[in-house]
Image 1 (spheres, rainbow, N blue to C red):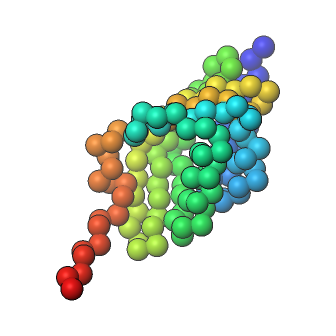
Image 2 (cartoon, helix red, strand yellow):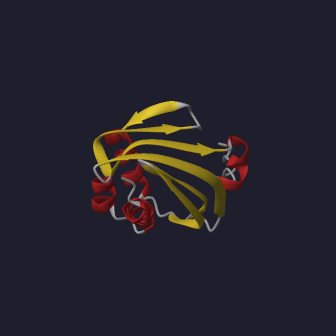
Image 3 (cartoon, rainbow, N blue to C red):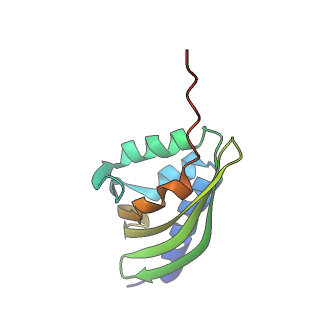
Length: 134
């Protein structure tokens, strides 16, 4: 049976935890067997590696916001399209459109596919700092 309200709550809990640097909540959103795929490198990432990456991002001074969230549920999961805005300590604000597809089990994320256009990287990453010459 479909439980749209539970899927929507999980989706909000997951993305709100990233915005709020709430690692404990983020960790509870993932099922033990969770696998995450990213279109940027076309590799599957196990749960622990993804959590480590997200935790590192919580202490680097960047502020993350998921704007224009559009969520659609389906039997066993949800799709969220959003624009990720990241404010860097340098003052640069990057943005990227993302499509996040999640399959769930027992109220947790079990399989995730995250798609973004690599051609948008220039709008997302801050300009490179000029290298000093010796």
